[in-house]
Amino acid sequence: MKLLRHGPPGREKPGLLDGEGRIRDLSAHVDDIAGEALTPEGLARISAPDPRGLPAIEGSPRIGPRLDTPDEAGDVDGRRFQDGSTATMIFKVPRIIAHLGRFLPLQPGDVISTGTPPGAGPGQKPPVCLKGGEVMRPGFEGLGERTRKVVQA
Image (tube, rainbow, N blue to C red):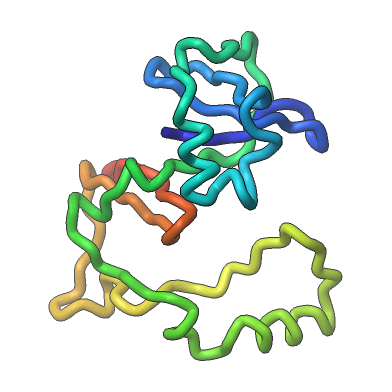
């Protein structure tokens, strides 16, 4: 299941991308694609209706980031390279927030990119690089994964 938000900025509605690539409106089943909607119970509620029975969104609406749910699991062609958590971070989350908060106005919903967990390809013995045709599925436990096919440059 591919979840997303659609609509004008500040008035986005929850939706999903069906198997044919159409956006379907989920607003009758969930208020937003966040918080409790992403718990196992929330995902069960979102998964309950048949997507074909949900209203299709017409035209070309603005859409937010897509999120693949845990049923779309995988790694790089099925091989896991990285498996980390905040426990492996050099600087802990409160320290990072305190540091950035000294010179950036942080707001709820801000995303702080902190780097990558151990296991990245260049750190492998021998080093490993992505190749055209491979499928990457980066994800976060409890939140889901995104699928991306690597293309040859």
